[in-house]
Image (cartoon, rainbow, N blue to C red):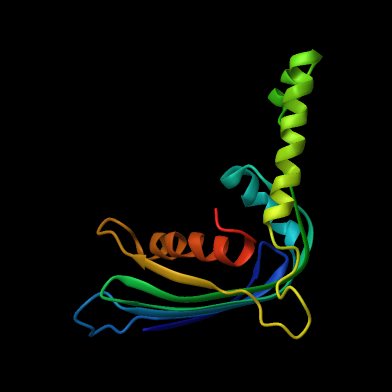
Length: 171
């Protein structure tokens, strides 16, 4: 079974995807590939805030290529995002605004500001980092748990690959 699809991802970038499921395979197997081209990175803020409490303040994805497979329930492959001028922000909630009043609040505000600086220090601004240099890629490696759907397995396999390709240092 093969599914080919093209869509606007988050209403901002062209996404093309192909998923293949060999129907007669004796174990759970699949191949999938996706390509995203030219997207304003701030369009991801709609999902980033609720998921990780951060937002992208600027940047552009020039391309993102995902190529992976599932064999015997093991996801493997690569994720190669290419982007420019990526900057992140840690937004202030209404509760934080109330807490950051007075002397004690001043120090909480300083802490939040330090977190913003740290976040922008560890996130790569550009990938590739220099013209002519290959982009950093994230490795996809995940063992599917029996209760995971195919889609949940993709998400679980993408999280470490995204971190590996977006973050400058080992955390």
